[in-house]
Image (cartoon, rainbow, N blue to C red):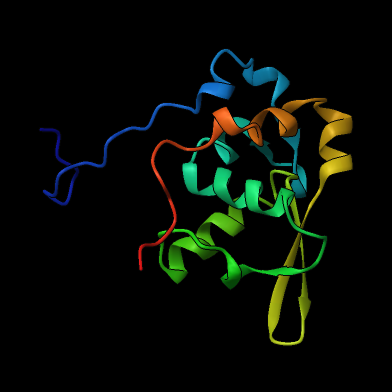
Length: 135
Protein backbone atom coordinates (compact mmCIF):
# COMPACT_ATOMS: atom_id res chain seq x y z
CA UNK A 1 0.00 0.00 0.00
CA UNK A 2 1.34 3.40 -0.93
CA UNK A 3 1.60 5.90 1.90
CA UNK A 4 1.83 9.65 1.70
CA UNK A 5 4.27 11.79 3.67
CA UNK A 6 2.01 11.81 6.72
CA UNK A 7 2.18 8.01 6.96
CA UNK A 8 -1.49 7.61 6.15
CA UNK A 9 -2.58 5.47 3.20
CA UNK A 10 -2.50 7.48 -0.01
CA UNK A 11 -5.82 8.22 -1.67
CA UNK A 12 -6.44 6.08 -4.75
CA UNK A 13 -5.90 7.79 -8.07
CA UNK A 14 -9.17 8.05 -9.94
CA UNK A 15 -9.37 7.40 -13.63
CA UNK A 16 -11.04 10.11 -15.74
CA UNK A 17 -14.71 9.55 -16.47
CA UNK A 18 -15.36 7.42 -19.57
CA UNK A 19 -16.69 10.39 -21.50
CA UNK A 20 -13.33 12.18 -21.25
CA UNK A 21 -11.07 9.23 -22.07
CA UNK A 22 -9.19 10.04 -25.26
CA UNK A 23 -9.81 13.79 -25.08
CA UNK A 24 -6.79 15.80 -26.13
CA UNK A 25 -5.60 18.00 -23.27
CA UNK A 26 -4.60 20.70 -25.75
CA UNK A 27 -8.26 20.90 -26.78
CA UNK A 28 -9.39 21.26 -23.18
CA UNK A 29 -7.24 24.13 -21.91
CA UNK A 30 -8.71 27.55 -21.30
CA UNK A 31 -6.81 30.74 -20.60
CA UNK A 32 -8.18 31.51 -17.17
CA UNK A 33 -8.18 34.40 -14.75
CA UNK A 34 -4.92 36.36 -14.47
CA UNK A 35 -3.38 34.52 -17.41
CA UNK A 36 -3.22 31.14 -15.66
CA UNK A 37 -4.25 28.10 -17.61
CA UNK A 38 -6.84 25.80 -16.13
CA UNK A 39 -7.33 22.45 -17.83
CA UNK A 40 -10.89 21.38 -18.40
CA UNK A 41 -9.88 17.79 -17.81
CA UNK A 42 -8.70 18.81 -14.33
CA UNK A 43 -11.93 20.60 -13.54
CA UNK A 44 -14.00 17.69 -14.80
CA UNK A 45 -11.75 14.87 -13.54
CA UNK A 46 -13.40 14.71 -10.13
CA UNK A 47 -16.77 12.90 -9.79
CA UNK A 48 -18.04 15.51 -7.32
CA UNK A 49 -17.37 18.35 -9.77
CA UNK A 50 -19.01 16.37 -12.56
CA UNK A 51 -22.08 15.98 -10.35
CA UNK A 52 -22.08 19.73 -9.59
CA UNK A 53 -21.97 20.52 -13.33
CA UNK A 54 -24.70 17.96 -14.03
CA UNK A 55 -26.98 19.44 -11.34
CA UNK A 56 -26.33 22.97 -12.60
CA UNK A 57 -27.16 21.84 -16.14
CA UNK A 58 -30.60 20.75 -14.86
CA UNK A 59 -31.20 24.05 -13.02
CA UNK A 60 -32.21 27.57 -13.98
CA UNK A 61 -29.42 30.17 -13.95
CA UNK A 62 -28.77 31.80 -10.58
CA UNK A 63 -31.12 29.51 -8.63
CA UNK A 64 -28.62 27.17 -6.97
CA UNK A 65 -26.66 28.26 -3.92
CA UNK A 66 -23.42 26.43 -3.21
CA UNK A 67 -24.90 24.68 -0.18
CA UNK A 68 -27.91 23.33 -2.10
CA UNK A 69 -26.07 20.52 -3.88
CA UNK A 70 -26.52 16.96 -2.67
CA UNK A 71 -22.95 15.66 -2.80
CA UNK A 72 -21.12 13.55 -0.18
CA UNK A 73 -18.51 16.10 0.86
CA UNK A 74 -18.25 18.58 3.69
CA UNK A 75 -18.42 22.35 3.44
CA UNK A 76 -14.66 22.82 3.06
CA UNK A 77 -14.40 20.27 0.25
CA UNK A 78 -17.48 21.71 -1.47
CA UNK A 79 -15.90 25.15 -1.27
CA UNK A 80 -12.74 23.74 -2.84
CA UNK A 81 -14.70 22.16 -5.70
CA UNK A 82 -16.54 25.43 -6.34
CA UNK A 83 -13.17 27.19 -6.28
CA UNK A 84 -11.98 25.06 -9.21
CA UNK A 85 -14.98 25.47 -11.51
CA UNK A 86 -15.07 29.28 -12.11
CA UNK A 87 -11.40 29.68 -13.10
CA UNK A 88 -11.86 26.78 -15.51
CA UNK A 89 -14.67 28.74 -17.18
CA UNK A 90 -17.42 26.28 -16.33
CA UNK A 91 -19.34 28.19 -13.68
CA UNK A 92 -20.04 31.83 -12.88
CA UNK A 93 -20.86 32.87 -9.33
CA UNK A 94 -22.49 35.90 -7.75
CA UNK A 95 -23.36 36.84 -4.21
CA UNK A 96 -27.07 37.29 -3.44
CA UNK A 97 -27.52 38.35 0.14
CA UNK A 98 -25.85 35.76 2.34
CA UNK A 99 -25.67 33.13 -0.41
CA UNK A 100 -23.40 32.59 -3.37
CA UNK A 101 -25.43 31.44 -6.38
CA UNK A 102 -24.16 29.78 -9.52
CA UNK A 103 -24.85 29.48 -13.20
CA UNK A 104 -23.39 27.07 -15.68
CA UNK A 105 -21.62 29.00 -18.48
CA UNK A 106 -23.17 26.85 -21.23
CA UNK A 107 -22.92 29.27 -24.14
CA UNK A 108 -19.36 30.36 -23.44
CA UNK A 109 -18.12 26.84 -22.84
CA UNK A 110 -19.91 25.37 -25.88
CA UNK A 111 -18.56 28.15 -28.09
CA UNK A 112 -14.99 27.27 -27.14
CA UNK A 113 -15.41 23.48 -26.83
CA UNK A 114 -18.50 22.41 -28.78
CA UNK A 115 -20.19 19.31 -27.42
CA UNK A 116 -18.06 18.77 -24.31
CA UNK A 117 -20.77 19.80 -21.82
CA UNK A 118 -23.32 17.69 -23.67
CA UNK A 119 -20.92 14.78 -23.37
CA UNK A 120 -20.36 15.31 -19.64
CA UNK A 121 -24.07 15.57 -18.90
CA UNK A 122 -24.96 12.37 -20.76
CA UNK A 123 -26.31 9.63 -18.46
CA UNK A 124 -23.49 7.22 -19.30
CA UNK A 125 -20.98 9.82 -18.09
CA UNK A 126 -22.48 9.86 -14.60
CA UNK A 127 -19.88 9.23 -11.89
CA UNK A 128 -19.57 5.61 -10.86
CA UNK A 129 -21.68 4.87 -7.83
CA UNK A 130 -24.26 7.10 -6.24
CA UNK A 131 -22.69 10.33 -4.98
CA UNK A 132 -25.79 11.45 -3.14
CA UNK A 133 -25.67 11.57 0.64
CA UNK A 134 -27.51 8.81 2.38
CA UNK A 135 -30.33 9.45 4.74
